[in-house]
Image (cartoon, helix red, strand yellow):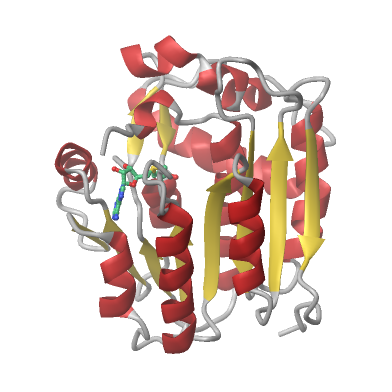
Length: 286
Ligand SMILES: C[S@@+](CC[C@H](N)C(=O)[O-])C[C@H]1O[C@@H](n2cnc3c(N)ncnc32)[C@H](O)[C@@H]1O
């Protein structure tokens, strides 16, 4: 387990994942029913953008940095809401300005959207990252941080008493069999809570593994979002990624169709995005 999200926080992959996460949370908490949220691979919770890790890769600058520099006029509403959430977190760490001090990880974005009575469990397996995550939420009783395997947490927490859940699965894809483990975990989760909303991030590198993974979801109602920075660089850096959202709430697709091309247009000349639906029927209104 060598992966440290601090090198990548706020990059193009986080933009895709976090804008979708914020919109899912907004739509799912609009209903007057309690929600259970599980973040299976939570990371450290927040990331220093002026620190050595972020500066070494420059990924945040090329990602969230570009969006922050944009005028809010004409910006898609979902992007503006996501940036407002990023700024609200950042404001605790320094005066507002053009450059962000700190970037919120997925658990912070979830926490900001929770209502009283909602429940949130954040799992992180790496001991150092888990310690940082525990510190990030020290004294906050609305967040249960577990140093644990997120895949096991799927088995131990689903179905939740609330019967409504958002599950974010965001593995580092270091292990060669990650897609297989993921596929088994998602199948298991769906058996336990078929109506849950599942957001699953994946890198676009191994097209055959992605095709197999998507094939395993053929029976589900899902949306596939992708962001591609364009022609790959020889350094082997990740340049394209996707997010599958199973059982997306009503209006989610519309927000993503508006937001992702806008974001792609700001990430470079060759960048593009796509939104595609599963063969199953489109999400029904509530
Ligand atoms: C991509 S990062 C998570 C980023 C975070 N979701 C966010 O959006 O801010 C993946 C994290 O999963 C952790 N991890 C790896 N395998 C895990 C497992 N089986 N269960 C829980 N966490 C795991 C890694 O240590 C790493 O911190």
